[in-house]
Amino acid sequence: MRRWLFEQSLTLFFLAIFLLALVGQSVVGLLAYNDEQRAHGEHGLSYGRYLVSSDFGGNVMENWQSEFLQFTLIVLATVWLVQRGSTESKPLQDAGPESDEDARVGEHAPRDAPRWAKVKDWRLRVYENSLVLAMLGVFLGSWLAQSLTNWRMFNDEQTQHGEAAVSWLTYVGNPDFWNRTLQNWQSEFLAVATMTAFAIYLRQRGSPESKPVGAPHEETGSTG
Image (cartoon, rainbow, N blue to C red):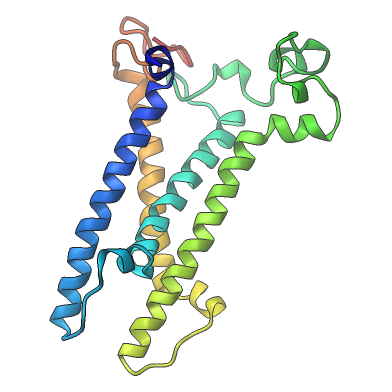
């Protein structure tokens, strides 16, 4: 068990702090929501009801969709785009899709390669793009969930102000939806650009996100 925990420690660590942060968000979110309800002379929600509310769901999905959009784009963009001197980039000469030999697929696949890496049909096409497809699927699913929860919350506010509710399609074209969406996107894109640039000049000894401490700034794609 100790060996297994060590081998999975990176994933387990981030899952643990994810759950802690999610619980923390739910608690403070409930407090903020109920404070606002009381300020308007309305009843608050219990913790259980808040967890299934559009307020909590919308806030969670807004962040999830932007995170998975970030990963989708960086996985896809780094196939063709490069940044000299950054560990977030392939070496400049390797820009573009790899050859079958470099990708170790088909006849170049080793004996212990995944089964779908050894075939030359639609299964290989799916498997060789499976990371982007998975990230894209989660992004689209969470973005749809965000639109639905925010639509419900928007209509609740419309009703409280004596105004007519709108359809989902109308809401998707509403500035409220795009304001909630773009405020998350811009921060993710800035984070990627910053990490890409910082990795050229800055180091963290022992991290695969950094070049070796003594590596020259122009060295691209190496890890420490």
